[in-house]
Amino acid sequence: MDIKNARFVQSLQVYGPYEGVGLPEIAFAGRSNVGKSSMINSVVRRKMLAKVSGTPGKTRLLNIFRIDDAFHLVDLPGFGFARASKSEQARWSRMTEGYFASSGLLRHVLHLVDLRHDPTGDDQAMNGFLRQAGFPFTVIATKADKVSKPQRQRHVHAICRCLTVQPWEVIPFSAEDGTGREAVLSLFSQILEAGPG
Ligand code: GTP
Ligand code: MG
Image (cartoon, rainbow, N blue to C red):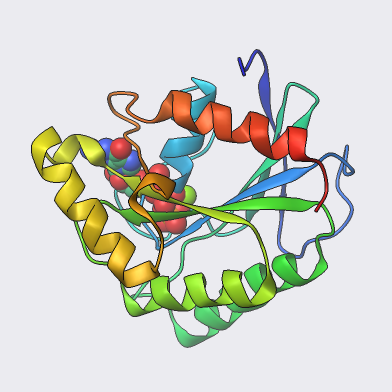
């Protein structure tokens, strides 16, 4: 797959009808600061399409991006943002849970975890939720550029043990050097070709 055109459509606080709704959706989920928005920019090769920040909690709404008038990417707010207030965390839960519960268009979830670290309790909860709800998902190990190539497999294995996935199912990814971009584009093609579950 080659992406020719990517554009921001809308930010939503509550999932509901948005301009152009109806195309398949692929969602980006993961802890705050793991690199969801950076991954979107890197995959579509647009540096500033999704807002990125070194401070966790940058993405606070459901942000929808249209790719080649063929599908939508949904950038979800990150979870496990320790400094968020109780009410902010409750708002986050309503927003993301509401999304998962009410979007009939969600075809696949990319669950991003940091390649360098063991997945957290929140990551395990996310993994459990995706399995229980029956959403197809792929684990993406982000910030791969921060670990030398020979060390990456060791980290991937730790992630696999924790989330009960196979090493070949995990895509190491770097928004900095493009590692994993081709693999993600072919995953998108497979998702779209497979059609609705
Ligand atoms: P929230 O919106 O808070 O949920 O965070 P997010 O998951 O969207 O993370 P974001 O893309 O904003 O990135 C967080 C920080 O990590 C930024 O400082 C990015 O520059 C950095 N970052 C993201 N991806 C990579 C990567 O592949 N390599 C490196 N070295 N840094 C990255
Ligand atoms: Mg973000």
